[in-house]
Image (cartoon, rainbow, N blue to C red; front, side, top):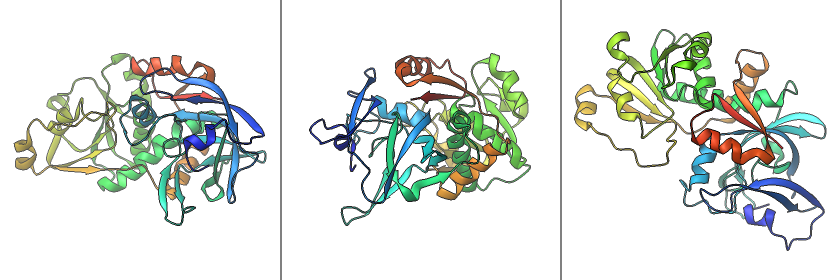
Length: 326
């Protein structure tokens, strides 16, 4: 199972056939079809029966062709939760593959077939046990929480600091901001849609709908930028002197242009990148969700209805995470 084409090559001698959602062409509807798989995983790997998989914004960037080095056909999905030998497990999605004699870091659902399928093969060392069988809840929230655990360390944020979270009603934003609130951070949650304000308040954040919110509330110490190009310049203007913006996501997959570099220089602003999360941070996020300290916000869809789910995301009509159920 070295790459996507190996899994879906019909010429292979196979025993198992299962359903998967495949990107055949960038920005075209997913093909939900039967996949051929070898009779068993390769040595050191195991086969997980996928029960729920989160639809991450990064998956949609892949679908749009935002990572041109990742070529169709692609089975996306790195937020995998399911069963191994009948026991509840998750999959840590960063996979170190040394099978060719040269080690490479591969991402499930990008360089390797992912979890938009009934089964997925992964290294046994990437299996993390789940405390409960609430697969949908974990698929909705663990990735977002783990992402903000890592980003908060990159930022160096502390209790009492203030932060803006953009894309606050998205899968990363709405779950990650709950982690920041628990850290004792004063969180401003940016959303363009006022009807979501009540939910954000219940989660402990201060909802803001205007990019110039800081004229009323004051500037912030940190920005956790989940949207990227469309709003990053507004986000930078909201920072205090020597404030820090942590760039987590760029949902459009388009170049980021800084409109006022002189402002960045004069205010001595800091821009840092935050890439995913570590194995330990993934485990910590699972613990927080399992203990009920994070409220998962999501909408479930059957795998067969994936194109309907994609349409919902593209129209920005969803709150929280889309969770696919193979």
